Image (cartoon, rainbow, N blue to C red; front, side, top):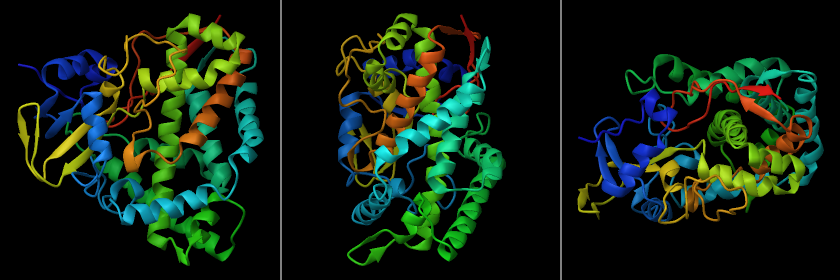
Length: 387
């Protein structure tokens, strides 16, 4: 009897065989372990992403949702409220042109890579990707530097799920509550003394006389700190893992960094850190001989859809020249990730600088420790040895 358990550490070590079984034999599968249906084929996932009226996000988009988050964030609302939030948040994000961040991002990357000068071995997660993403978020929000470690620790805890109880544990919920309180304190300080930073932009962004409410700013900042720190770090870490495992691709990019943007897209397809999100059905749906009822949750397995041979030829081949248009690494539909341009920019610059210094490296551990999360898949540690 086939079993799909997204909480299993063994599953996260290599989820792709199970994904293939789902796609081939159980494209609409009820998982007792997850307590929801699972969509694994690209076409079904894309249909769900584009049909928010049926596949609603208003009851939460995390497989294991945090209390009080559903209906309070951009990712957990449906139109028309979602459209208002998205327009205002997009306005805040574009109030400062992205090209103004190129040099600050490069300086952040070089500062952490300089610290590795002469190293023969380093932890890419602990010494590179997490440090770059935390510094970038702190730069964007102009946050107190002394808060870096605590904010990162709380962001990492927020995305985790207890694999034994299959739910958020008290420490995960406490981390979320700490982050929302931290965001509220930041907002109060910035309203009293506005600056030229992203948090001030969220407070002042206006369309037709309408601005974000304080609670909306608080939840947006909380979500961005969680997703920005852990998701972007995971995105970079998985890209580093892919290059460690594919030396020909790594050497090609070291010789010609112009190929890095296409390689990033292939990494997002081949081994994305954003693996699984959920929706709630607003009506009964028939799919692949199964009847799903209104009120049922449906897991959208992005990581499986990105390996669907019905959409991507030779999906298990890592081909940095593929140009995989339409991959699900940043979701899709009305809830497509708003931070894609910033994430791509940061990752591109980080790997331009990394490969200029370390053109040849390999991972030390055959078995990697993975972040225990029902949504994301990224290594907690990635030890690399420099040739």
